[in-house]
Image 1: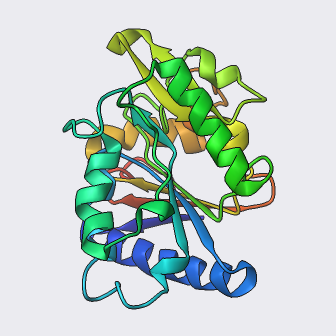
Image 2: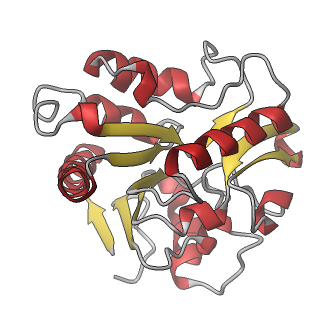
Length: 240
């Protein structure tokens, strides 16, 4: 499903209502709601909205377990940390219990070790390969999603839950879940805004299949729902 919004505010409102509905359904059916959060600038205001008076009392947050789809290999207090952003905008305002938060433990280990330990913790929680109720994703202007960047080794990973992924153009190593994890989720929601994404979004959704060049094209949940929530600037070139 592709939905276009006139502003980030209306996009966030829809996403929050969808988040609440999915959470209620999961909690009713399975007693808990498992969500993998995304980082970056776009979801920040979305997390703030979820924690606001308008939405904070609509679900039982004690039954929500938070994970992260990817992370920068930086200390948790770094301004670049996805965990720090989510902590400040969502976890602290909601007074989330620490045992409900599964973050990448980036403070003390090498990237490879962090990824290995995260994969083990996720597998232990799910008692199997994970099937998240919801995975939130963004998309970069280059077509990357999570930290699955164009032409990087992690794109080919088929067995592991989490890996470290060297990104040559950034000269850095990122941490990310893999496409098998994303595509096993019950629901995947992309949150995309900005004119700088328009050309890539058109190619990803309407162009030739080039998954190495545009990794977001690899997101195809096997038996789950896929939502593309985009603002009108990002959707400007789409043939809708």
